[in-house]
Amino acid sequence: MTFHEIWSIIIPSVVGIMGILGGIWVGQHLSDRKESQKTAEELRKLRYLLNADFTLVNRMNLQAIKNIPKLRKTVNDITNIIPDISDNKKFVDYFAGFRFSVHEFTYWDSIISQGILFKLSEHDLRFITTSHKAISKTIKIQTDGFAQFGNGLFALTFGNNDADLIKTMKIKTVLIAHLDSMTRAHNSIQETITDVKNNISWIDLTVEPIQDYKTSEPKMKIDKKGSYTFE
Image (cartoon, rainbow, N blue to C red; front, side, top):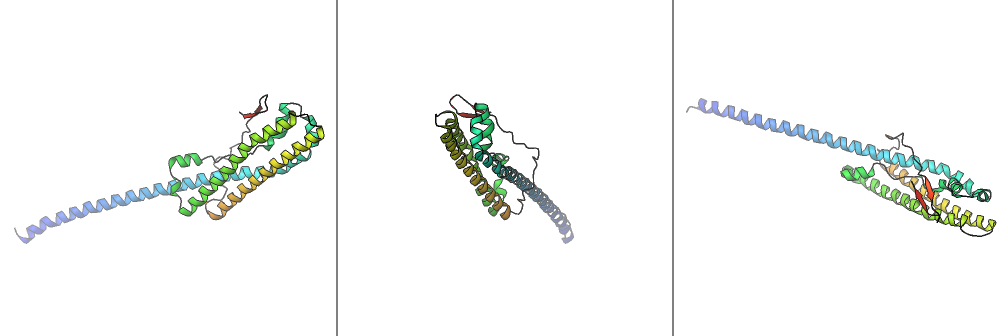
């Protein structure tokens, strides 16, 4: 076999191999690019939902803070209010507003179930998780505490024979303590949200994909013993 014959065999083989390798490289490049685009889109969506969650909690918390002066006025006017509370309905009308009105994060459970939180940077992940934990703990403490507060207030209002002045002072003391606790909780949540905003560039508290979300105040029911339930 001559040199030219050998060369005529080698060249097509080399070209074929190079073509195969080139195809593999292009395919891998396209696959990597597609995967990178998918990861980027998942991260964008994750940030969007977390931003929306913090935006919603921030909005509810600021509204609750604005409502504090109204509740303090209710406490200051308690002397005039107590004589007018003659049944459960009026009791609820006057004191349901003392329920903690900041609710849990909307998208958090879905994010956790999909296992995509780890896509955040270590810095962002630390701030998001610690902040969520702090806010959720505050909400739970205040929500659970309202039942105890309500039962105690109900007992003071209907379940004792104290003179009106003594009853009023006891009720006022309970209301002030509860309101002070709520105020500290709201301020704590606001400090946490501000800390997140100041440390994470993509948290701007303006993303609201659920702008039509309305806090539906659950109806409070009281049984004969004065225990609270919501529906």
